[in-house]
Image (tube, rainbow, N blue to C red):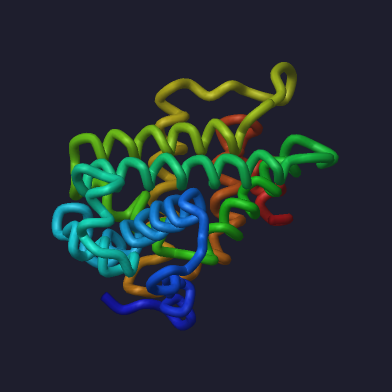
Amino acid sequence: MARGDGEGEGRKLHRLPPGRHGLSREFVTRNQQERLIAGSVAAVAEKGFRDATVTDVSAAAGVSRRTFYAYFQTKEECFLATFELLEEHLLAAVAEAAASRPSWTAEVRARVAALLDLLKENPDLVRFAVVAPPAAGGAVMERNRRLLERLVEALVADAPEGRGYSQPTEVERHAIEGALAAVLADKVSDGEQRLAEAAPELVELVLVPFVGRRRAATAAAKA
């Protein structure tokens, strides 16, 4: 699958020096686990959940299959661990972005910007967590739904109540989740990377159920 300019460089992984490198066991363990996580993202982005193999993940990580099985019993276990770490980083980035903003809509804009800043550094995260899961089904698809749900919750955290604000229904929240996934997937389609363009669209679709289309469009114009 083709990739946009500059993406290949971001997918290079540094290998541990061979032999008696003098690194602590804790460092080696953390390094290898993180490499396998990165390898699973790269392999799934290239081949999808079903076709990516343990060999593919290990090769992308620059470790042996034996090392893979020292940490994970199956590729599915590795994929789900990758979702956990990805969700942790995304939610942390979104939460930190909202500090000291003048209004809630400004907080939402900042959260969307932080999300896109993280994703545009590695579009394969979108391919792993958003594009590939529907074809996988099962636990992977369920994990995808949970990630999108928590991500939307983080983007609209502390939404005001009262005059001028509405609280979306469960159906509307699911619609936001689906629209968010569709926009992100579209911006990495055909091997291109256009995530930087997504801010106004994401801000508007997130805000509409809370403040109405006119106010959401005004906020989106500032994104």
